[in-house]
Each structure stands twice: as structure tokens, then as C-alpha cells.
Amino acid sequence: MSFIDYKIIAGILIFFTSLLAVSYPIKVRAKPTHSPLLEAGDAFASGIFLGTALFHMLPESVELFSSLETGIDYPFAELLCAFGFLILLFLERVSETISHSKKTSNMLPYMIAIILIIHSLIEGAVLGVNTSFETALFIFIAIIAHKSSESFALAVVLNPTNLSLKAVIAIVAIFSLMTPIGIMIGTSISEGLEMQSAKYLTAIFNAFASGTFLYMSTLHHINHHQKMHHAGENLLEFLYLAFGMGIMAVIAIWA
Image (cartoon, rainbow, N blue to C red):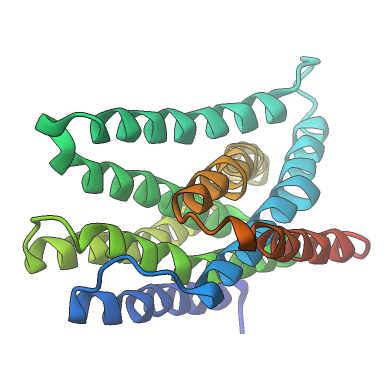
């Protein structure tokens, strides 16, 4: 089985994971409810994202930029990482600003969907553009672990709104397709480029995506759990997050 076949299978698995996660809340038009298991899984997945960004994607990007010998001594990987972090921070701040305006409150679900869609497209492109099986596997694990909670959260956010069922299904369908589309785009680009150009693209995507991974696993995670108002479970969720990050740290010993 070729590396491209693995990426195709990864895209299919991610797509169906998204659909399965949203099927119940959409079917019953469920209201936001607290699920300790879902919260623990989300915290664990955030830890995987954090570890993937810090121990694998960002270091690999730094190494790739160094090997390219551009002749410019500048931390491009770190700059792109910060840029990816700030992009998602900006989008979430805009969505929060909109949420405080009664006239535009109906736009909030769309803003949340945009944030998640952009993140999903980026993470898919990063998986697709990577030519290292180990790194691609880490990214896939992070995505598949986080996708169900993201999908479920998106459906729960959309359900209480005055959006029609068709609109909710359309937004969820677009979100579910974004990561597989990103994988196809990334794979197509990497396959069509020369080795040197592919290295540039991989370095750029890894650095930028590591910033989005950092944001989703830190500020976005904290903001989401503060809204859940379950302070007594904060320590347990932190331990799940630390466990997820610890796993990626241990894997970094060999990869």
C-alpha cells in the first residue's frame, strides 16, 4: 500500500468520524449538555495537538528551513507559527465581538463554523503535504482524536439557533469535508512539486499549522471549558491534556 493510499484512507476515516459525531445532536436537535466523557476526550485530544505542534511539527519545520540554506538567518518557522496562532485568535475575537451584538448575534454560529472550517482545511493540507510517514501519522492521530469533539461541539452550537435543519446539515457537511479536501490539496501539491519546492511547502505548512494547533489546544480549549462552568473537573481535564501531550513527548524519543 502506497503512502498516498494511506492518506486517502485517513481522509475517509476523518470524514466519517465527523459525520458520526454530529448525527445524534442533529437528529434530535439536542441542546448543549455536559458530557464528562466528551470533555475528557477533548482535553486528551488537545494534549495530542499541543505535543504534535511542539515536539514534531514545529521542530521539523525549523529543521527543514535550516536544510534549505536560504542564506537568511531568520526564524521563519517561529514567525509562521505565531502567525497561525494569531489568525485563529483574531477570528475567535471577532466571533466573540459579534456575539455581544444583538443585531448580529445570528452570525455567531457562522463565525464559529468558519474558525473550525479554516482549521480543518489547514490540518488536512498539512497531513497531505507531509512526505514523512511518522509525522503524517502523528497529525492523523491528533486530527482523529479531536475531530469527534469538534464536530459534536459545532452541531450543539448550531442547534439552539434559528437556522433551519438544512442550513445546519449544510454547515456540518462543509466542515466534515474540509479536512479530506485539505488532504487532497496538500497531496496534489506535494506530488506535483520538485523535492526542493516540496520541502519549502512542507516547512511553511508545518510551521503555520503548528500555530493553529497551539491555539486550539490552549486558548481555545481554555475558553471552551470556562464556558462549561464545571470548575470541579478542571484538574482532571488538565491531567488528560497533560497525558495526551506526554504521549507525544515520549514518541518524540524515537521519531
